[in-house]
Image (cartoon, rainbow, N blue to C red; front, top):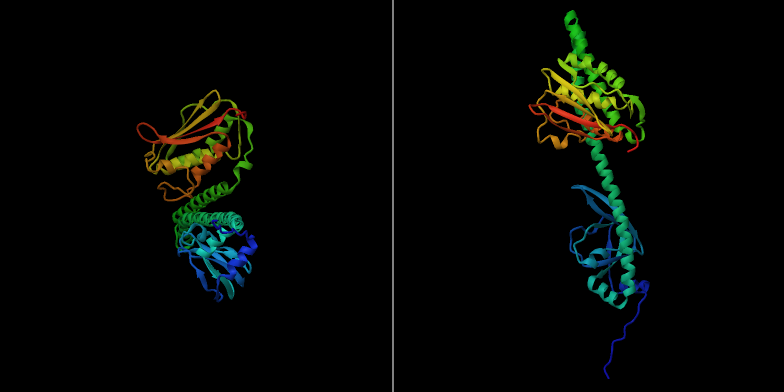
Length: 366
């Protein structure tokens, strides 16, 4: 009669104790590395005394701690199960004693106690979820800090030029023998630079504002709305030798818009066009009334938009060759138009010049 090997059922907790009995005890001083990420994996560890922190690199240089295990916990099971290199570094947080259990012994115990494997897999799944959650938090925090850094760098860089100009003009005004003409010129420089900085601050505030919760649409006389905007923009255009013209008259209709926020779209597009025409030119506004939307076009006689710039125009901080500005203007325009349930695009006209086209719905039932 053929003899058969009897399969012994072992409880998960008893199985872990059996593993510990067949293990090698290792001691680590506080701060000593038990294993490093990238190393080959050959064992499972059970903590008898002390504590161990598990960490990994976030980005090229920054290290983050994802877990801290204490007496009775085990670690290193992921690499034992999948036989891949270590994905994290384990270091003794204090003087620590661990049980070192080789991969072969672990798998032999799995064969004797499937329940131990199931328990470990449950623990592995829980830890993986927790690691994912913490990793995403770290990644978000890192990305947020990087964004703040880019934001601050952009603002500091853009403010440097007008501040330098103001400093120069202030020095000129303070010169004892400065002529009336020189003082007048210095005051004009200071006024222009203050206006420039005020506009930049406005863009920053507009960008950081939670626009989707603040846009208030009210039925507005569009013809009157555009007339008021032209009154505000024409003096600046005139100072830069730019003519602001109407190709078609703004329609005499009432549409839903935010009277306080939408003007920023017109002023930003007009000022962008002015910047691209330092020797003067023309800006032409036109309006096409459709069945569902009002289409507005802002054209200029400048050099147009180069193909390599076009895909990035509406990205934050993208200055597309301008020597000043926050790079936020067009991204704000896009957000404001979309908050009005419209859309915006940019292109070039035949014969040269850029054209920005955006739409505004004629009613709120979209």
